[in-house]
Length: 338
Image (cartoon, rainbow, N blue to C red; front, side):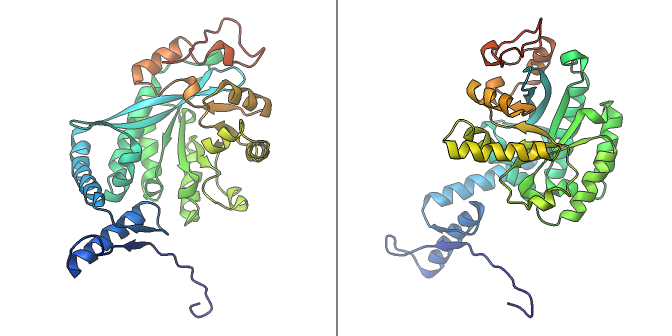
């Protein structure tokens, strides 16, 4: 307690011993510090015991960080798209743009292996701007979806971008220069990233919605946000984390909890998107729940731009067997996306 305020503290601990190796005091402290770094990078509020392999991991990370600067300069990135479908008809209504790094020697590097570095180095502004413009340019020319409805593109946004004073204006500029209708752009923000320092974030999201852009709250259910605060966030779509989607086919207790999470989104009059749909059984459960949209490997792997365009041209989505009874529209072509 400091004065009248209670301050909560957390600790990350790195441990090293000289029992199994011969080292001096300086090396022992370096080993402990390396273990501490590993504890922090693994989620904080935990402890790690030093292992020699940690040196190699840190060296790889430093090399990857150096390569990242060259990747930004040379534009070694590309986008792939994962379809988002309407549960009742399995027609494609949107697609999420996913970033890939085509490393010249390592091959494809997935976001989990480098996004934290992009944010740590401050390169998120440049990379995020490239992703937004590239996704808007690609989506602008997508064929219309079911009933002639335009297909939207969803782009992930880091909190650091939302805190930039000119971010809203940069989005406006991209929309104007690419010619993409604002309503066809969905910006995804992760629940866990916006539970602190919320006022500036809310102001930014409000301004983006005034442009006509839609806002999605991603990974809902994993961010430990206050449900009362959720009402304050100007969002249009709620993306339910894949862990809850998987629970729909789990034990009875898990199913009941998952139902509550989905019903919560519906109760707030938000469009609910179920992430991580991988089985036809899960799709049927979502249809029974009244969940509007779904995304996952059942509808195919993330697609290269040309493959995504072809998918929309042929109205390809999921196997006919996966479509709820009576939901298949007349004349629709249904087969697993590749």
